[in-house]
Length: 280
Image 1 (cartoon, rainbow, N blue to C red):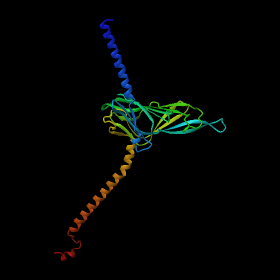
Image 2 (image 1 turned 60 degrees about the vertical axis):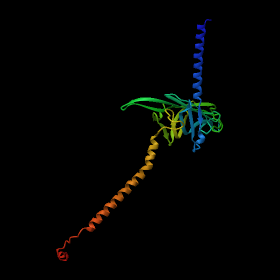
Image 3 (image 1 turned 90 degrees about the horizontal axis):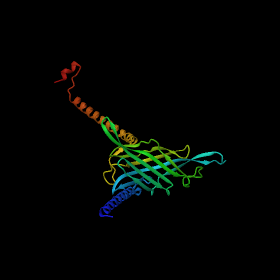
């Protein structure tokens, strides 16, 4: 083989090695995740972080539980009774994730992978009357659960793994570059592969940002959910009204005092003419 042929082969090998290295680097970046739930003062809340190239690209703090209906046999072993399992996301869960420019994903596993939660986020641009505006949202939720896990399920009829998925989901809608925060509870319905069963996912104490994180481990400015804004208004409104009422009372007293003082300093002119002789 001549020198030129060897050079071409070496070049091909180099390109293949670079492609493999790039693919491996991407895989390593996707797996750089951390569970920081131990830092939370709320024992029911978890904190997950996904990092790429040493930089935080997704942060999520939330408490989650799932209401899962399942069938058991009645005492007569003829009829079916529907029970409910309440499954909370626990600390110490395994976490995985990936970040992209327009699509990010968070995966959480707990109780020896008997339960798996997947949350898919997308960033989109829309044309509005003010011009193009970008937002991000939670576009899909998938919950996989194993009814053979005996802590939450007692003698289920349909024993085994089931998958519950959201449909046409547009939750946590937030302007691009901002984080989403909501202390109030939010429910998301998931259709289960267990026939005629709907799983309810309940989120609370949520603070999430899957895109455009500027500072490491620091959320960007919060976009609060309407429920929190309304509750905050309901809490501050009585205080504002009380301050306004107090200010009105003070102004009224000041005006009354000034008026009373001016009236007292005026010379009173008697209405009865017989009193004029006593004047002067």
